[in-house]
Structure formats: C-alpha cells, structure tokens
Image 1 (tube, chains in turn purple, green):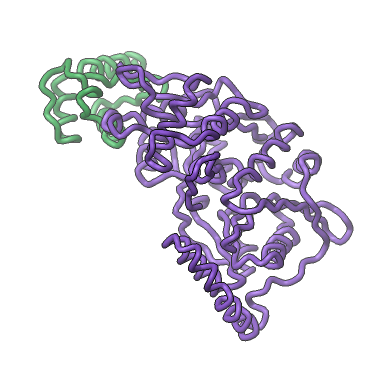
Image 2 (cartoon, helix red, strand yellow):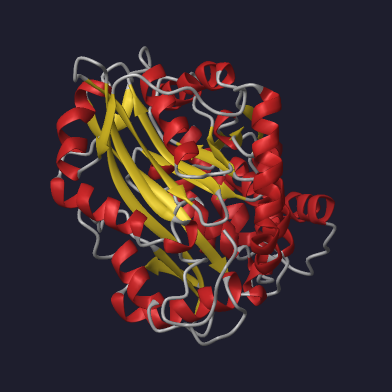
Length: 374
Length: 78
C-alpha cells in the first residue's frame, strides 16, 4: 500500500536521486551537494516548522517515488502572525504518476496546519489539480513585467538562452552594444531610466527587520521578517543561487534620509536582471522603483524583469514596462476567505521571495557538472 | 451506490472497473488529473463536499471505499 509521510533526514539521498532523475540531468546519481542543499532548505533553515513538513510518497514496496518540498514563512495578516507553507520541488517517478501520487502529495500538503499555501512555478497540469482540490490561481502573479534598456542585447541574450548558444551570444555582444548605443541616441532617453532622487545603500538583515513594519504597514498581509538569523539566512540563500547572477540588494532613502523601501534582484551575466522583491509603501513607490531601474541599467543590464504586484502595476506602466504572461503560474490555497481576498484584491505584499521561484535546486551544479538554464 | 460510482468512473475516466474491490491505485486507473475530475463528479453526483482532510489515499483505492467515504460524508451532512 502506498503511503505519504513527512520527510526524514535519512530520506535525503533518495530524494536527491529522485530529483536529479526527474527535474535535472536524468541521471540517478545526484551531485554531492544536492542532498545537503535539500537538508538546509527543507529541514535546517532558521524557523523551520516541523508541523508543516516536506513530504515523501512511498510506493507499495516502500521506495520513495515522490517528493514535495515545504518551506515555511511567517506572515502578518491584519496584525496577527500566520504561517505560510510554500510548496515546491514536486517530483514523482513516472511509474507512480498514474497512481495520482502528485495530487495526493499536493492534497496532503494543503491539508496541513498552515494558514496559507502557495506555489509560484506551477504548470498548467498542476493548476488543474490544485484548483480541483479547492485552491485557486493568483492571476495577477502569473503576469510578468519587463523593462528594456538595451533592446538589441536583450534580444540577442534571450535567443541565445533559448537555443543555449552562450558562446555565440558573447561573441555577438560588440555588435549588440553598438546597435544599442545608436538606439539610445535615436530613442532620446526613452531607453535610459532617469536618475533617481535620494540615495541607496546595501540592504542588510538588520535593516530589513528594522524597516519592514513601517514600510509595509499599509498592506493587510505582509512578511514577518523579525528574526535576524532568518533574514541573514535568506539573503545568503539567495546569493548562493549563483546561476541566476549576482545578488543586488539595496535600501532606498529619500532626500531627507527617510527609508522608502528596498529591492532585491539578480544581475545575470547574460544581462537580463530578475527582480525577486520590491518592498515599498504602496503609496510611495516611485523612489524605490526609480532606483531599481537606474541601478540595473547602470550595472549594464540589457533589461530587467519581475512579477507584477498590484501596487506596482501602474507605476511600472508609467516607466515603459511591458506586461506579459510569465510562464509561471502562482497558486493559492487557504481555508480563510478573508485572507484570499486580501491577496486577490491587491492588499498583500507577497513577492517572489515568498515562493520557490528563486530557489536553485534545478539550476546549480552542487559539485557536479550539471548547469541548468535559468 | 457502488454501481453509481462505477458508472461515474466509466463516464469520467472511460475505464471499466471489473469489481468494487479492484484496487484503483495499484491498477493505474487514476492519474492526478483523473483523481480531481473523479472527485468533482462524485461530489456533484452525490451532493457531498469531501474535505481535504478526509481525502486519503486509502479512501480512493476501490469503488467500495469510495462508496464508504460518500456514505460517511452523507452521515456528517445529516
């Protein structure tokens, strides 16, 4: 008889092997660091919550044939602390897919004691399963935004990534650079973001904890980053996903020195920056967004993209950002209709950081030779 | 009731299940999408709502167990 139970430390080698086979190279031999990364991400991170564990699916012979990763965060909703379960890294052996292993894993996870369950990299099939089990889609969070600075290089990098021709992209860079320089003159400032007001400085774990309650106070739902160890771990975990690029995290102040917000993004070597988080007072978005765009441009990014959030939609539109289907589906589940309404009506500060999109288990080499494509 | 569940499986999944004791999981009749489609059709046909907490692997292993689950849901509703 098949069974679903919480992940145990001794399962990690089997889980890593399963994940390597299904989500990475296809080999049964996981690289040396993958199991250790799962251990840190799902068992040993600061604030790990054993009441909302990762799950394994055991087939009739007791072998691990499915896995669903769980990361738990604390949020503040209307002044009270609640728990968020982030569902991710769902993998099942092909031979148990006709035994509904994926659906039962999702169902088991949704049934946990967390107040809210999310996933932000779902496929269309997972969306249908998720909704069939009572969840819903966060339509806005499925939309991406992109702002081009150097369109020729952006296009060249995009095509190279799609066709996995990194060397060709590198050799064509001088051509794209020349064309982008000409385009910048012709476009008369439309491509280059304006210089922002105020100042920006390195974002630290202490600054996150100190400023989040004030900056995000207008949201009904927001992260509860109030533990320095957790905030430091989170920034370090982000920085460790080196295949996505260099991590840039900046705190923004206005002319008077008051904190306006912060942003976190990856500056990729291929030139397309990926935004992970923009934290702002929803009534004072401009300074932080201006710094974000100018920062990415000044560091040589060909463009920058991120996930649309309700309070950013109009300010992004004013800054010549283009909206598109991101290709990643964001799904929600909660027994609390008021909580879902707060999210779906745009009164929540939930970013890619409160999801699994940024995690690099499918990308990083972990001491092996695999190099996924972000 | 078991006959009605059998009909729903046939109509929804296009699968003829030979007996009420046939193991639906081991026989590979149910993939994940089929499970949620079956769940939807059962809830509609029998006017029950099966909470996630009651939707266990064992409850869906056979037509008999699915029927037992529906009966228990009706009992809770009543």
